[in-house]
Image (cartoon, rainbow, N blue to C red):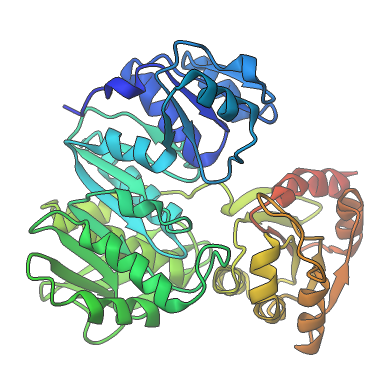
Length: 464
């Protein structure tokens, strides 16, 4: 049986309860019987889903939303110190718990798999959740995105396995004690929190050091940062290290990836035996995510052939190359990619899926700090598209940085030979893109902000 409710979590109040990470924890607690409440800045399907489970969700932030009998207040790193509910918690001496600590408490007593990496965490965690559920193991899981199948980002299962997305952005993944940890890659990102790759490596080493004795690290044999991290942690005697990838030295070696439209067929060599399975999403990087999931499940003792078959049931995560619809012969697809590596991977995947189609991209940069450090690389990635529209920077939790605008990306893209148009008014994008698109084209809305809202609007304009 899965663990119950920690005493501090019996009546939690979540500030920003609609966020991907926060809502997942709130859902699990609600399903375990906790009296969950919280607030968010705006109405959303997530807020409605939480209410349907029995949670109290307020819209807007106000001190009066926090009940006097709350056992704790749960926050993420995005919540500012002057939030009125956080201030009220201080006045009432109600303990404040970081999201990662709340998740760690829910994982206690379970066989935990923690999925980490600069890119691919949500997809890989989702693949494991779907496969383990398909095999009847009834896992608990907490994911940073909604599954296309079950349509949720978290659940409380009765099985002994708990699969969690482990976020490195604020070092919160260091709170977990997994039996199996996956590291997909390690690159410099989240520049407000990490100043160098050495800091990234130190953070990931701390995460790996939290794996339980005789636990397993599953790590890429291909990506340079992961290879360096492997070198650094190999001497941890109580740790089994399993590498995966296309490298000849990989323990789980990918022999072949054949992309067939929007699916891929993957052949791996595992323990000297060949195993072929299908991944129902396009692109090499998604295929490698599936191999990481396979290796992690095998580390828990699950038969490889059963896992391989179950992984074929995965149909995607919202915002990860999600088909939003088709109108006038144009397919509109949504991508969460916001780092140059992710952008390149998704653009190459779409090229492989429809090599004869024109690829039009609507890109919204995410965070001023990321644009400042990686704007040139973002622009170079956009050169893979036939034409791009670039919006203003989505600030999320950050204040503007003087001189840092999407012009950095546009200039780099044009220098790389890309056809790029700057659009500062987001409401003008649907009509502009519909005017650009021709039958047979693919339109990709890309970014971690609210650019996702434009997909349905583009389809409406294409239909009119």
